[in-house]
Image (cartoon, rainbow, N blue to C red; front, side, top):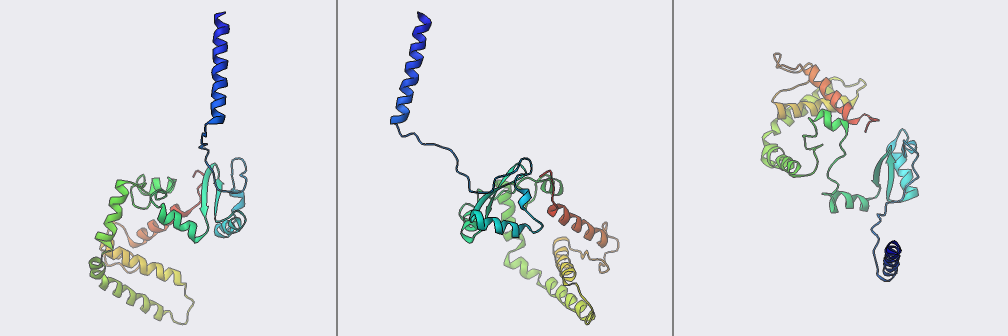
Length: 226
């Protein structure tokens, strides 16, 4: 008798809850995701990304709209493909999306995400961000380094004049110009092959340029682990 009484109480309670759920306007908190193609197992939507990712994403955006969701492997990715959507991500809700994904490149090339590029949004990132306009890019600092930019620009134009009439890969010369300016401003030395006056430097210009090339490669190369 006692067990049957408990059973009646439980059934009555469940019936009451069912009735209340129909009468009261409970709101569903189910998340709504942007539209996108159905992902494959394991690879997700990587099969839709060709040798030119921007073109592939543009074609997908024409089908699924200015905001869509893809899966790179098992990782969900939201893609904004219009000026209005970009404004929502980069300006209106920028603090929400300020942090980059924690990839292997950020971990192993910036001492476990300890630079402004890879560090997550927070007090450390905000402090580093403030240093740039106050210490590096202020009008006073930029003007104090003006002579370096002028000297390197003249050297850049002189090299092009010497090569007049010959095939020139402009990208290499522009990289050399940028590296010369940055190394003189940030490090006080000119780390360019064949031009450095600092023969006793711990790192030779050739080694320094190889380090930069490797750094750029590691930060841009596709990593299946990510």
